[in-house]
Length: 303
Image (cartoon, rainbow, N blue to C red; front, side, top):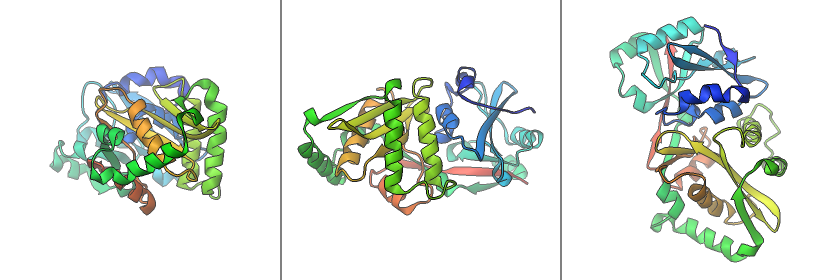
């Protein structure tokens, strides 16, 4: 099986395989796959059995090389077929396997070919869009209070919130650098936050070439927040990147609400806000918005 590196130039060729995909993990977003590329890691792809085979190739940490589940508009792959795929492709594992997929496959066959382990760092947080867009009820009282403080401090004439366009790319990249300095995320170029910065910058560059939709917010003419999302499944969107200056009280809560109101079409009922990467602070922040469920991720490793 011959794999090749994929980039934005391959978007139109690959997009049909993602059109009706049903896996609820954020890793199955084509624009996101194209964004997460660094010097150490890049996505590769091949076509087999009318399916798109996506893999993650690493230049140094080769033990991390893996496939994700094949994408096909017609069928699911059986455990036996996935076993053959791993052997043929020389990738020893399949990452980002949703719990919902595990629940519907032949368990005896699965355990015959693979070990199955949970990837706790990659459990995605799933929310009802209405909850995030309206923040109703006592449990969201603190969020609403912070939004009220923000709105009192910044009148509408001091604020501009609108979609990101190509002309906004330089401003968004400058803001991303400022956001990163605030959090010292460049201290370790291999750390998760540094890699996320690269992915966010790539996503900004792709804003007009993919299904990414972006939103930006400025205060007194200064960009202080941006968010990027897209459709994941028939009724679920994913908010891939959401950055806001932490020094402005209530800004994040206000901007998060607006992203959920403005970035997703009416037929999107659920929003995936990705995983917490096993970071306690991030887990606390995501839980404070009361997910309706957490979609677990698993890795299948060849026996």
